Length: 138
Length: 60
Image (cartoon, rainbow over all chains, first blue to last red; front, side, top):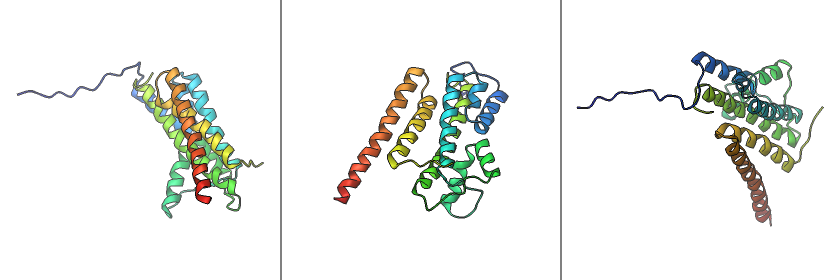
């Protein structure tokens, strides 16, 4: 009879405390790239910040729509989830009542997609910061 | 202030930023990040061009 012992895999790279990892995740969501800054990954953080913020701002300037909380059409719900991923950018945009969407302009639809994708990319960035903090990535 | 991009320029800008994020987050070393980012970028732009030609062929 063999006893199976589950051993948690040791981190491959230097890790920080769990609290710091969660902080990097939340900060990374709230401010694009900030999770990487917290972990002193300056170049990566700057590139991620520029990418996500530029995409989001371009989306708003293209008169894309920023979705509010809703329980209607499934695409509207998914649009809201994507938009919320942008963190503080989403909160500020909603507070300023920007991103109302101009359906008569074809480019505005591209803007709507830019905003959603910026939010989704930001979620990937925040999770990446969490992985770095946990020592799963250099 | 508003910005208006053509379909291709919108796809190009999208490809640049999405590839940057994918490259940085999906690979471990700087060299691999650059390679993967360029790979994603070429797939995005290549996909746009192929889709454009497919639509042209369907139209004609």
